[in-house]
Picture (cartoon, rainbow, N blue to C red):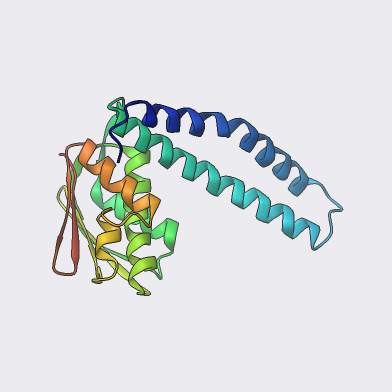
Length: 194
């Protein structure tokens, strides 16, 4: 990333400060959605605005997390979770027709919400940049595997080719928690701390 110690702080501050106007946009969009009498296409436009505002909040969360990790100020709120449940959240987020879940799972100590977003982001990256319709996510003990990872998507999923913010931050997060993200053949191995 950067050797400038001020840069992660600047990014974190920007992510924080952008939340206030974004909350205003989101709040008014939600108010307009609840207003009766709003006709198409206006009602559809307001729903699009509200959805985009939610996406921006998620992106700001990821950007702020990356900045805290890079600045050395990330303090995870560790909780016990199950890897099988992490895989199921990814399937629910991305669609069960796109993410097939298997395995027995296992207990891990993680920052729950951030890790849920990370696993979903890695699966989404494999789908988006791999040109595949379905990925398998298997939970075995403290490890999750995601496959297939195509040669084209591998550097993006590993955070080496910075074309997917979610995947890049996911790799940073897993490593900051003391885990690892590696690729063997066409399978991504995400080992979480247990």
